Length: 122
Length: 122
DNA sequence: CGGCATCCGCTTCGATACTG
DNA sequence: CAGTATCGAAGCGGATGCCG
Image (cartoon, rainbow over all chains, first blue to last red; front, top):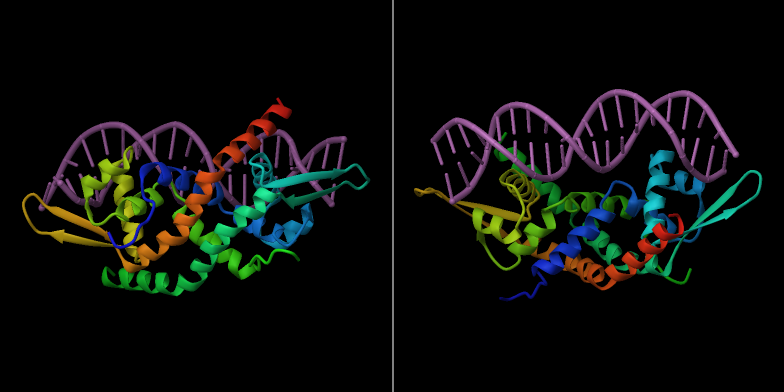
C-alpha cells in the first residue's frame, strides 16, 4: 500500500458520527462565524445569512450541548445573549478549516467531474 | 485575534457544502473502505456492514458523479463491478482522515459535555 | 451479482405566530 | 431581543420485490 490512510472500521465510524454531527446545513457556518469571537444571537443571524431563528436556536443548542460553544445570558431589558466558542470549539475549527481549504481548492474539480458525468448520460 | 481561522463567508460556504456532501450516513464509511484498494459491490457491502443495497448504490453513484470513485463493469456472467478511489478520492481522504483523528481523540470530551449538559437540565 | 422501482416512516428544515 | 410552539413540505434512508 502506497498511502497509509486510517481506514479501519473504528476510525471510520468516528469520522462518520462527527461528520453527521457537523454536516448539517448550518453548524459549520455558525462555528465559522464564531471563530472571530463572541457574538449576540441576532448579530450571528445576520452574519450567517439566510438562517431562520428556529434553526439558529437549534444549531446553537446542539453546539452548546456538545461543548463547542458557551451561552452567556445577560438578564437585562432587552435581553442579551452572547455565544462564544469554547477551547474545544476552537480546536474543532482546525481540522474543519483544513477540510474547508481542501474544499475551496477542489470545488472546480468536483464541478468538472459532475458536468462530465451528467453530460455522458444526458 | 490570536488564532487565524479562515472564517470568511466564502470559505464557510465551501466547507458547508462539502460537509453536507460527505456528511451523509454512509459516504465516509464507503470512501474509507475503498482507501485500501478496489472492491466489488457486495464485498464493499459486507465490509461497511449494515448498509442496504439501495443506499450503497446511491452513495456510490454520488461519489462517482463527483469524481471520487471510478466504476468498472466486467460484462461477465455473473456480472462483476469494481469500485476504486480516484486520485481526487485519495486526496479527500487526507483532510477527512485528519478530522477523523480529531474525532477519535475527542469523543470522550464531547460525551462528557453532553452528560453535563443533559444532567444540569434533567 | 449488481442493480432499479416502489412504498413508507422518520427526520430536517422553513414559515409563521406567539411570549417574556 | 431572544427565544418557544406548531405546521407542513421535502428529502433521507430502510424494506421489499423484480430484472438482466
